[in-house]
Structures are given as C-alpha cells and as structure tokens.
Image (cartoon, rainbow, N blue to C red; front, side, top):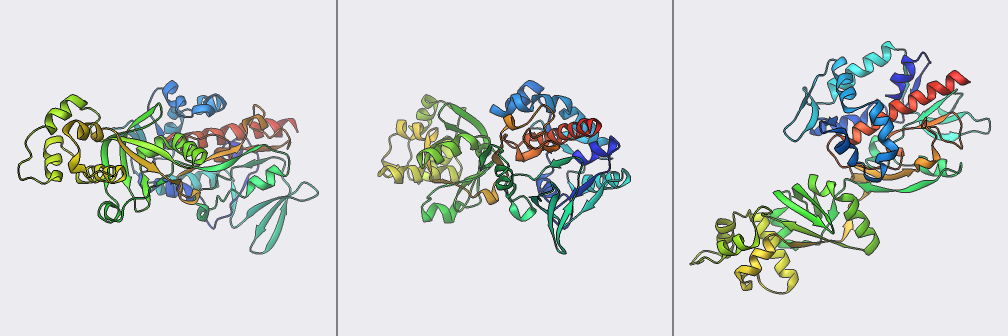
Length: 392
C-alpha cells in the first residue's frame, strides 16, 4: 500500500521482499474469505484498537473502511457486508485482488525485488539485503519498513527487525502472540472425543470482560473468534500469573432459576448426558466441558444438585495453562512504540525511515481491524515519505 501511494506521488519505488513472491501473508489472510474491514460506525470501530486507538485514529480516518472498500472496488473486486458486519470481497478470496493489485503496481512503475531480506544498514547508511547472490547494498532517499510482526515466520515475518532497530535506539515492546489460542490440560477422554469440535453461542468471561461467539476445542487447548476477542486479557493474565481462569456460559440467555427448573425434572432411566442434552439443550461437547469441571472439583457430575448443575452450565471454569506459540498466532502484539514516531510515521532517531503495519505497538481482534490498520498505516507512512522527499 505504501508503494502504491508513493508511486502515485511521482517517486521511483522498489519493494524488497524476503519471500519468493508477493503477498504471502495477504494470501494466508484470505484463506477464510479475506475479511478486509468492518462496517460498524467509526467510533465503535476505533474502540477495537484499545490503547492503540488514539495513535491510529488519524491514519484510519484518512484511509477509512469506506476508502478501503472503494480501493478494492477500483481494482475490480467489489465488496459486501456479511451478517456479522464484516466486509469481504465478493470473490471471497485474496488471490484475484492481489493479482489485480500487482498489475496496477506494475503499471505505476513499482519494481519488486524478491528473496531480498533486509539486515540493516552499512556504515555509509545504505540499506543491506541478504540475497541468493550475496549481500546487496541499496541507496534510498526514503525507506518504508513494513516487516510485520513475528507470527507465521515461514511467510516472511520473523520479528528479526526488532534487534536491528533496538540497536539504533528505538524503544520496542516485546513481540507477543495476539489472536492466539491457549493451552489447556484436557483429560485424555475429553481431548480424544472432542478435539476439533466447536462450542457455539457461548459467552466467555475473564474479569470484567465478556464476549459472545464461537470457540473451538483443540488437542492442546482452545481457540476461535471469541477467544481471539479476549486474547489480550487472557494473554496478560497467563503471562503475569502463570495461568488464567476463563469462565464459559453455555446458555447465556437462560437464567439460573429457569435452568434449575428445567434440571429439576425426573431423569428416569436417561443417562445424565441425555438428560442434560434434552433438558437444557446442551451439546455433547458442552456436557463434556461440565464433566471436565466436575473432574477438576473432585466430585462426579452426577452428584451435583439441580441448582449446582444450573450454576455450572453458565459458569464452567477452564484453566488456561499457557499461550499458544507466537509462530501460529494470527497476529502480534508489541512492537515499535508510537512515541518513537513523528506525525508522519517517521522514526525520530532515523530521519527518512518510516514504519507501518504490525511493526507498530498496537493490536486488535479479528474482524477486519488488522488489515484495515495495516492498509491505513501504509498510506500514512507513504504520505510521510512523500513529504520527506519533497523537503529533501
């Protein structure tokens, strides 16, 4: 995005990419349909960026969700709003959009140099790249760094830039997994039976934070959209205390009194699982979670009274033992502190060097917020580079 804006401003642009082809992580983002942005009102939209919202506000206002949708349409890929308010290309894939984008960049004179991994600067201030042919020095009048975080390193973003910029005096918050899964010590029975199964329409709570949505049971723990929405709070609790207790409500719209009434009926010859399934409309995996909680408490679930069962249905404690590895996280928290930047996204300690995207210290849940901020900061850094080039 930065390359497109700088090229439109009349400058000669080369994109140096460590990978053999462009847009590897963009294509990965499109595996689920390429959620470009979100249709909600801007004030609510910005709140998703939490502490980073004030720092990103100007950039996202300057290149808004509506602007991103118009940009996609101009590339021949109109968008639509899904039932959740998320915005997707009608093709529901990243590849057609990427191909059209690369054609437009080529027509704008943007050159790509692949298999060029940036390793810093030499003593003369030239950019250094590691290539199959050896080290390549490059003189640039302005540089935009858009090197990503540290998730999915096999797609190119390994976070190696952090040490390079820290050595130049930049303040960088440690890179941490965001929108990630968490590990849980499931029993063997639960793991073998319910791995890969979803919990739908549940409410998740940690402290004062509650979200609704869907989660997925994995062999090593739990993940999914609702987990990602709470990942910052869950991550900080796990990293700070060594573990965190996540409360899961299976029937969040049904109060304790109504549940108790339903669960006070005669069970007859039904198994407890069948009784819970019919009386409270619980899924097998939900009942399995209740069994896990009972096992952890040292009491069999069959010994719970109707009132205790009703309470457990909407307050299942799940102990999170750890954070899934950053290599498989959807995105990254941490990065370059915004205080290191001027209003044009230029590093104060490195004049002529601009930064954009996940390198910066912000995070957001899935839902279009990650791509929107990446696009918008790319535009902002490019406009800053054009101002710098005009001055110099």
